[in-house]
Amino acid sequence: MRSGLQSWVPVAFLASAAVLVFDPLPPRVPISPPTPVPSWATDATPVRQPAMRPVYSLASYTYECMECHRIIPSPEETLRPLTQHTEIEFNHGINTRCFNCHHRKNRNAFVDDFGAEIAWEQPQLLCAKCHGPVYRDWQAGSHGRSNGYWDTARGEQVRLRCIQCHDPHAPPFGSMAPAPGPNTLRMGVPAPPAHSGKRDPLRVYSGAEGAGNSH
Amino acid sequence: MAQADTPRRPNPASAGAGAVSRRGFLGKSAAAAAGLAALAAAMSPLRHLKEGDLPSVEDFLQKHYKEMTAAQKARALERIRERVRARHRVEAVVTDPPPMDGVEYVYGLNISRCIGCRKCVHACVAENNQSRAPELQYIRVLEMEKGSIDVETANHHYTPPLVPRPDKWYMPVQCHQCANPPCVKVCPVEATWQEPDGITVIDYDWCIGCRYCEAACPYWARRFNFAEPLIPGDAINPKISYLSNRPREKGVMEKCTFCLHRTRVGRLPACLEVCPTGSRKFGNVLDPNSEVHYILKHKRVFVLKADVGTLPRFFYYFDERGSRYHDPIEPGPVHATGEGA
Image (cartoon, rainbow over all chains, first blue to last red):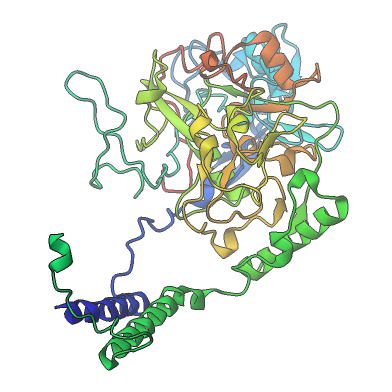
């Protein structure tokens, strides 16, 4: 009996040695492969790249505004539907008249409150006619996008103008597809709220249903 | 008394001093050989070690960041450069920019404008060489019901086809670079501290991975490398600095450093540069002409969990009117994101 016990000791040692060397049960690592991140997610290009000059593109041709408007007079503005520029999606609240912004005579300029011209390259002065508080915030830097250097003594800071984010004819900032969500080691997708309407933050889905990670 | 009369069982081992039975000898040597084999087997994973996996003597003797002389620091940066070249096949530019005089960084985030697109999250990962698997991200974007600010039930796994959802608002959370940081107080080895410009940094070589700071942080801003960080070779950012985005080892903490390798040379942080809405604002609060100074002075500002007394340098603000938060959202244009959206 005693010798039987003794012979178990080397057998156990050797068995554990074999397990350690040959590793028949590799550990399951709870690490999923990297989530593919689309390149646009890290791209700092602004959402709009408007031509900052008075041009108009139609059927793969690009015209200067005054090429047509020098010879073709515009009708006195009415509320009837447009016959030209119909592809412009127009969604600017109560601002529905072309000549609220565009100059009647010089189509290479915008118009200010007194009928004078605003240079095409300074669209923020036009927007400021109505959007005073936002213009004030933009001037101070709390509204709008900046790129480059915060310390202007060390480098240039690029301040985007209104129309580089907002379509002047349909100004609400657009929607976009979200970049992939987190795929953390221990966190799952939160379970939906129970019938009481309270959601338990510690309860997570275990399955892949609705998982934000595979996206 | 009864025991004294009990006959003792014969014991071969104690039959005479030094007498060893053949059976006992064989058994013991077999056990000893098996034990040695098991010891060798237990050490067998060492075979898989590659060159550079173990710290060199110089690595081992490296001092705390604040105690290194300039020459020692230069050698430490050189070692980091060599390690990045050996592991990632990339020629890195390793720097250690010091804090600027008269600068205290403050971050402002306009929750009226944030649309929850998560571009900041991924720009941060790419800039700061965070692990892709297991995934490690400094920024979480919380989605909450409009009219509520309950971070406990906030969702950061939202995946609608388009954001923002009309009945939700979005609140990105990252390290708040507190002026009274609880994470620094709990560190038992002083591997993390607050720099003069307000950024709380970690000496990754000094961190012992106890994760006290992770537990102490009320904003869940600190991340732990539970496994060997994986950065695909072509994804590494070669512009690295000692205190911020150099590749980390398994078993150390890391956190947002306001991209100090960028901001300490005057540039804006990566999360700010990629934000399509311009919701993120950054600058020197001590400069009265800075954007963040204007925001703190003129906008409605709040900090997250003000009641815990951490005095964050990360301020959320919102616009008075005419912003998405207050107005019903009419379906606007959809910005193409290259994913066929």
